[in-house]
Image (cartoon, rainbow, N blue to C red):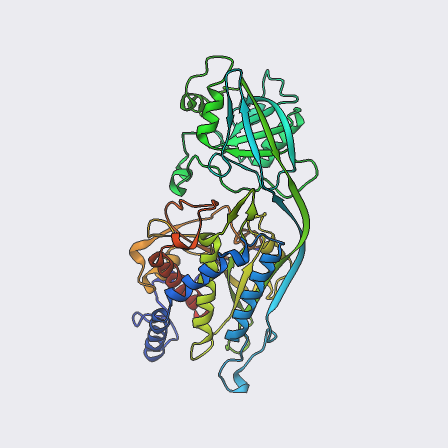
Length: 509
């Protein structure tokens, strides 16, 4: 099923502006809508959102690792907030004009999920014939979070980007015997390589060729996307794939640490930048052995936990209209790993705070919207979009009746601009929503974003709008993503846009 969400915006007609009028509307009702939205936008409380971010990213919720007791506690926090607002209230309309497409309650969707914690202490140490070099946990290395336990040692072999694709003239393992070694490969792919390549595929190739572990690092040459996102050479929290029995132990090391290893090459290698420049050319290969031996040691604990999605609804008043708008944000993060607390203030306590604030304002509005609005607090986003996939498999409102899914993520940092990604939604619609929110000069509208909780909805044919704060997020997936790094003005802009967007989609003709 493929649908395209269009509104009166497509022909230049604003539902909430006095002129020109949409067909069938009246000047009085349109002005009333303008005033109602303007009043709603003025009710946004930055202080309330900042308090929610402080709470959710605090030690009491321990980083909200999916399947953990702390994440369950955060789910209860969200459910209590929904309950306090009585989002499931009946609209203030005469009984003959009410429809009841949804029951009056909150929902908790649950699923059993494997969770993996890397315990403290963890160790990555390099040894050469001349020196020993231990990396500092956090700033110079982090175990990949779904790695199995490690207690291994082996010589380091650099294998470029770790890609094997003879049809494209790439074989980063050509002429190398990597049995019983630890391979080092760069993150991402060459600029000239058009095909997608995943970390899991690189890990699989290394295991097939006999490697006992791997290291990965960001190269000194960043892609345009990496530059836009503010990627640095510091390792960050990362899951390679879902937990399986045959994974290799691996760690993400800093760019500086990778450069030090390459300086130990057994042949003249040139600088790290020179090496990556060669790799980025068609058919380029710079795989090589090094004189470095690495020891990797940590304990990985695997448990089965419960994932919680928390859902509530404001039921629409329009007779015989069983459509809904869905507003979602994930609240999970990485928990406590390798001796570090990943608080996840920007990612994504900030989006969760926006979700709660929009829910509060719509719940307290004088009248319900025409369409129902579902509010979803997802878990499992960091572990492969588990929560959003769960909802799509068990929707509260049929997906055919879900006219749009709005996803809010990373709402509290960046350059002050908003980045909006749309699928099956006119870009002009998204841009003009910005005008309603007073943010037209701060908006950058793009097409499909390949990652996030909107993806399962897009794949199911539901139109999606993803809202993130634009620019670099310097604490992305780092222990330093704490509440004090959230920018109140950016948070307010995101909340204004999301409220205007939700309002428009729920009330459009």
